[in-house]
Length: 592
Ligand code: C2E
Ligand code: MG
Ligand code: MG
Image (cartoon, rainbow, N blue to C red):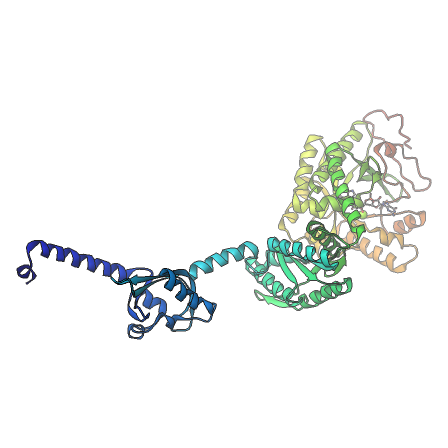
């Protein structure tokens, strides 16, 4: 027994030492870092669990081997010599080193080596500590990658692309070279996303990214700018080469693919712009490529356009027009003209159509076809539509107050208005505001409104009907002219498109179509108005075919409310404004 061979205090000391050694050995064995101890010739004497795990070797394979069993070709060949030199000179070395595990896979390790001297100052042992930093480095690299790449497609993002673009500009400025930018925007991507879901949209984007990469050389850049926008930088190109690349992209995208069980036929609109002729800095080049892309979209998509200076003018004009239209709506620089609708037999005024105009401070009266589509695109159509409805109802109330009997006012309402708002609700409110009976107003919609999928539109039309507002189909015959919707919707009137009326005298086919429309409407109890009557001949043909009401330049162009009430009688079947006896005739009224 120890206690009998040693004095009491030595026993205590030995116990403490034994505990100390036990603890140290625990720390050594359980340390997260791999630790090896070698002899002076670097043969491994002992090692811990973490080292065994890093190396992948069995204990019997490690003992007696040198740490060179972990040697990897990934390291610079001079590294091992540097380590030996440093150990020799300072007794220490620290740094990153790639280690090959027994399985062959590679780990990046932070290695600390220390020489341990014996009492005489000679090296007795080396201690090596290995920290596996592979995962930490991968994370670091991933973070750096994500900062410069698009997560979904792995393509460079805007930041990295701009960096490359700046470098390419600088290089080409020095060499006098040229390159091109292609702005690629997928057509109808929103439809895929909305109808098949985001997962399908993502899958499509990944595929498109891969195809775009294949269309260019490795030295060129393809980036995703977000959404369905991609930008390509093709170095060292002429216009012809850039156009050839656009052609290759179009052909590559045109190959159909299946996403979520649906066949998709992708296509894109592409804008091309060249350095240095179309711009000398990243912002200008990207903007101009974008403008060119926008024009390609306008040309019916699936096409490419090269940037030209005229695009700039068009874009600037559009911006000016947008700002002007906003101001016009705010300041009430809009006005309504009214075109009479007359009974073909007898010339009594059956109603008027309200047609909006923009009173431009410089350009005068601008017709609706030039600003209604713009108002729809930029989301102003609701406010514009409300202004029209209010002005039309107010005018009708004024006429009634003045004793001028105009049976009805027709207000045009576009599909976008139904999609974005509740035009019927607006009208109902205005009927109350101006104390008008609902049969005084009619809404004119085009056939396209009836083809809209949204269930809300059908509901709104039925609501109009239930309130007592009648509904007319404008430009009938120019669209799909499906008979089935005439039965399904509460339609009161059809307006025969003016293209049929224009050719009625010359074309027996057009007369036959008009006759068929009138016959069909009669069966369904729907009234018919012929639009665009310009001649007496057209008027009498329409009358003979059974049409009761007409509208057109023959009876009066769209005109101001003042001019409308001054409308002179037209000889032979012309319009007349009948006075109702509510109040004395205004002096300017040339009624007959
Ligand atoms: P629309 O509803 O079919 O209106 C008839 C258009 O034909 C008017 O053009 C009118 O001036 C023109 N017109 C009338 N009679 C004749 C004729 O005998 N011969 C010829 N060649 N043309 C004739 P406008 O005023 O330029 O309106 C064009 C279109 O703008 C309208 O077509 C309508 O779709 C739209 N619009 C007009 N006002 C509004 C409005 O307040 N809201 C909405 N959403 N659209 C409107
Ligand atoms: Mg109309
Ligand atoms: Mg029309």
